[in-house]
Amino acid sequence: MEAVVAACRSALAKQGTVIVLTGAGVSAESGIPTFRGKEGYWTIGAREYQPQELASHAAFSEMPWEVWAWYLYRRGVCRAASPNDAHYAIARWDDAFKSQNDRFALVTQNVDGLHRRAGSPPSRTYAIHGDVDLMRCSVECVANLWPIPPGVPALAKGEPVGEAARGLLVCPRCGEMARPHVLWFDEAYDEPRYRLDTVRDLAAAACLVVVAGSSAQTNLPWQVVMLAARNGATIVDVNIEDNPFSEVAAQSGGAIRDSAATALPLLVDQLSR
Ligand code: NAD
Image 1 (cartoon, rainbow, N blue to C red):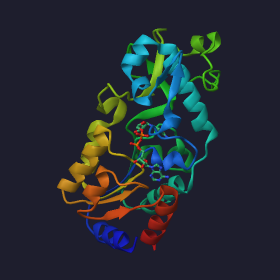
Image 2 (spheres, rainbow, N blue to C red):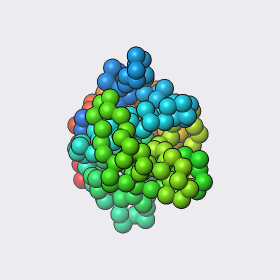
Image 3 (cartoon, rainbow, N blue to C red):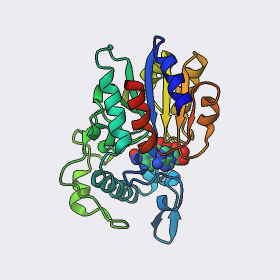
Image 4 (cartoon, protein in one colour):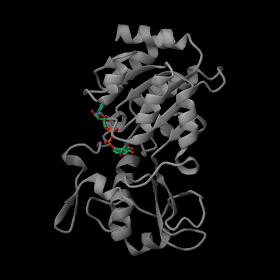
């Protein structure tokens, strides 16, 4: 930890953006499972699906209400969860930069809304994989995002989407079925919905990137770290396991092999002194 703190201090003395990049591991201690491991599996009929199969446009085209049922179950898990010490530490760090003209940015792969609930401001939070509380038109008649209507209930595991909820999960403009506002594994990032260009620009201008609880399996998080590293930024990895980001971090800031809810408050407190 001491070596990482020292590396972060020298990075902070330079000019540039400070980015915290979070993955599902940051919310694991709030009780929201990551996609790795048995907990992520989902049974439809006689078959068990992996999250990567269900979180796809292909699955939505074939069985939209089953995919919605999975999201409404997961949304219920997210809403029942509370932010943990990692989310609060990131919000405190953002606050410490408030006089420095938007120098801080939070880039999150998480769709659970816990950063927002911990106090990270929407203006500096880039939810690059979407948000389980939002929906949009499935035929993209407009680019608008809408909150999922309050009448749509959380579902228990295996519970189907009822008729009343189906009537609410429609595009308010054209009446076609709505879809969850999340980036699926067979879809591409873009600027209007997922802030691709803005996040790439922030990364290119970064002096420090702290990655927490991410396995480096998705494209934009990897781009953020590589763009920043190539431009001389210090990279730090916080994760309970080795992963491809640890190897990049080993070249500059180093890794903290501990849970996000333990490591991030310690790191932020030391850097705020
Ligand atoms: P991921 O790529 O973010 O991998 C999870 C990582 O967290 C792993 O490297 C694991 O070692 C690490 N980890 C687990 N517990 C940890 C802890 N307590 N402290 C620190 N690190 C910890 O995510 P994924 O599960 O492969 O999911 C892929 C995508 O699916 C995500 O990018 C996201 O868009 C979506 N997803 C979101 C949520 C959420 O919003 N909470 C949960 C699951 C999946």
